[in-house]
Length: 518
Image (cartoon, rainbow, N blue to C red; front, side, top):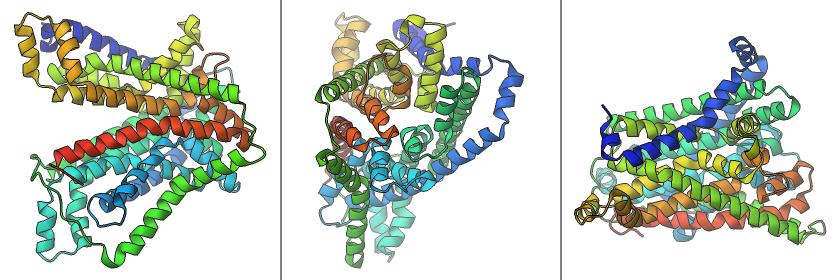
């Protein structure tokens, strides 16, 4: 017997299964390649002191950055949404903008101003500053959408603002903070740019060094598998923590009162909140902007306009194609999950999220093996790089498309079918137009992330093709900061456009959920 999803929508089911296989393909091949020399050889590489050292260093950096980002993100969101912080509308936009700064841009600007900044503390500083918005955005949305009655009751019972924040507000936003923390942890774990510039020997740098230093790819593949397992462990841990939060009543079933929360006066804490917010923005935005302007206006900033324009066009082209392919992959998966829930659809969703646990360097490594061994005609060609982007960032598109389709009324599809329209025509003319906001958000997310992707681009870019990320990395790798500045500035502009759009979408959707907002 076929599953219910397969019987009710065979074409969508087949398409979803094909996408799931394609998404999980690089991970499967990486495992096969790691075992190419036999289990004994793989275990020999696995139990080396070097592997344990990289594991501890990466885990320590990930834990430190994630913890601090959760603290910064929650505090920034509370100040913008709940407090009477002066200029909180402006702060709300500025707190989100570091999302557009790639880690290697942040690393290059900081190290160009303070050359002695390196190692753990350099990587920790840069990664914290560029990733805290992953916590800030969902927590701010959760605060806007949450029922303020519990906080008001707490204050009416004599609890001060601080105790109310610790005992009530934190409990309300804990699932959102954990979800944002997961994104931060996976970002840090897969980061290559900041750790390479700061010369911090983490897993990604170890994999890249192993890949470049030897013709034997087994050690790099084994390290890649360990990195994926670590990412999976973090993902599973976050889901369990979220489940416990719901079990202990830390999440609500209803939407609560559709009204705006009372503003909490900061009183004597206002100067401290202003200084803290300004200091965070100065470090996250001020230093990169100042450094780029200094290098751009300096004598060493000789801008090669044709190369810059070519790299910009290549970045926009491959990012747009990656976003398009990711959305095309996500459409059947999103329909299957939202309209035909079953064990099969849950399995397809899980397989499509394989890229969520596949850092860019391991995806690049797997696709290098696939391209050189199985599809030699596609190796270092544009389709391989676009496919890598689609696999890596498919979860971003799937989540947005699934939510968009789930929000579209199913009754309208039934009306279309009753008028004699086929299933495919109904999806094309009814479902997808209604879900277009979610589809657009998914495309913007993938475009933003693909434009900043470095390791997979370095390993898979077509011969003779350079993007803003690769040109920037090549210049900073030899300390040519003046030459790197134009590429960094343009890359931030390219990434900032979808970042601002996404910030507005988060704000409007959460305001709608709260019945107004600010």
